[in-house]
Amino acid sequence: MNHLQNMNMINFKKNPILNICYLGKCLFILWKNFGSSTVEVFPRKTLNINNNLEKIQEEKLIKTLQQHSSAYAWEYTDMKVISPNTSIHHIYIKENFKPIRQPQRRMNPNLREIVKEELQKLLNVNFIYPISDNHLVSPLVIVPKNNGKWRVYIDYQELNKATLKDHFPLPIIDQVLNTLAGKKYFSFLDAFSGYNQIQIAPKDQDKTTFTCPLGTYAYQVLPLGL
Image 1: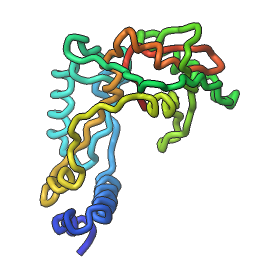
Image 2: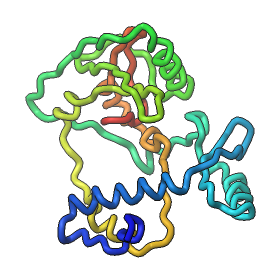
Image 3: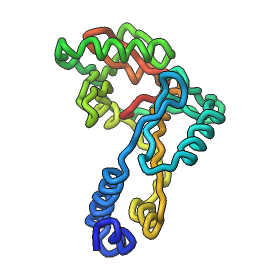
């Protein structure tokens, strides 16, 4: 009996941690076995799809994506901001918190252009704006991604420590993964920076101030890691 057949026998209640790890291994094997190919849905807008799709399935998938293109985003400029009347993010700071103005992190000169390009993208869509200074400043960092590219993000650890936590229910992971047992098909949905669609309350935007060798900026929308 191989790993893929064993997926139907997973019992998350017995040992949820080990079983979650085991399921992850099974899903990775499925992904490796299926493989993917790149298709062009629109000019310069590509999509990775399952290699095992039949030609008619591939054509139907591409046609569906083209018909509902307004619901998908390939770039920041494709994204639509959610109305503040529907959802807006507040940053509530704990009482007696002493603001921390963190210094810039050292940056490899070879990565400077990558950071500059990413900041310019964010500026072009008004996700961030220049700010002179603030009593609470976080550093920009750049880390390698699994695909060989680089991720630019802000280290908001100190701000998160000072922030009052939201209280809302989250799904229990073993219950969520249990729903996969015995299923023939499953899919993943990448929200592509969906958090950027939620605006930060104007009075709280300066709390997201971050610094790097290229300047000091603040977010108008919810950033990664906050």
